[in-house]
Image 1: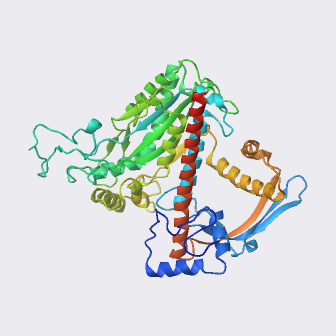
Image 2 (image 1 turned 60 degrees about the vertical axis):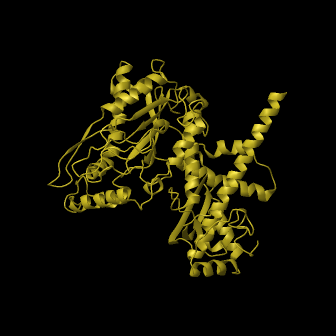
Image 3 (image 1 turned 120 degrees about the vertical axis):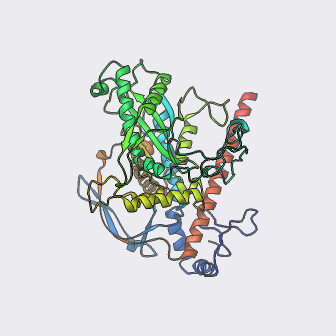
Length: 512
């Protein structure tokens, strides 16, 4: 392995001397010395292999311990492994952070797993039968209501907030109109026209109760489906079942909105994928989703004794589209495919508020301060275990949103846990087969590894102790981050090459 520069870190080099696209590490003098010391160290090869095994994770978890695998039928020891077997004396595992600003490598893996999970619920695969693609499916976007006018882009290059009386001002003396045409990278996008008129407290409270609004939305939708199918909510499961996958995304104004795939299946069966009732088509389901989103209401209790109750609802901009008959918003002439929908949701599943707009933003800073201010005045859990805002301070960094950024119903498709366990077991199985010099059927292996875990014939007993997180210093972390960036570029180049080969092969077929 080369040590001449930040070169080959296993199969994904961080930097190559003379490259046209050097990766800027922006290290200080101390970190540069740490990086150089690691690359010149005697155990650099062992370290780089450990780096590769955790997929160039920026903040891996260090573990010390041992695990043993036994055959459940005979009690025989099949395999044993311990951190002492490693050259560095410690076992590294991925941090698993979904946020791209924290760990690009783990974020990409999370997005890939989320893509497979969502796509399986659209078109089948990963133990989900392909017949699921015949059931009605709707792509819905549920937004937050307005808390005050903000700068934004308009279709067809329209002006931001045109008004005939451009001299009109709010009672704080600021204009209530904006005649500018904002570009996509304009830093004023999402900023209030008047920050003093903007209802920051209500936005934080809305974010806090957004998961409750979603819960009530699913309940309302099930009631509407039952009414449409001439049954009761309690007996809906006898004729149909509602499944969904949802991700949350921050808008430029710092407000969360939900993107969801809503699917209607038939009555629940052991595999959970029965045909949907013929009485509800995808357009009908889209109408019911919109009706449910419009009808949901929740009265939020006051944050403190001087506060008032608020009637919360989703915003007026509710978008519902049958997946197989809709069009892409960025290219209306092209159909919305399962891969595009899955990729869209997977991308937003790895985002945070800091990815949407930088935290060096007056509007977001004020939202953050408002959340912390409300938390400081709210009743704490120590004072009242049932205090509705007792944990608000814990979620101030997310501007009050306390929900999961990616969720799904139980029977929508395969779970992330199944995908992760299957990948881990596949890597171990492939390594065994490779050492034996044999060939392996990857399609057959996937079906086997995603099968019911109850069929396992082995059990693993382990004893592990947490030894810390992260690499030894900033120089090592910089090498990991650079390697992850090069791995991403390498994957993108390979994907582009595959698309080009596919396009050439398609052209040749058409010529024949």
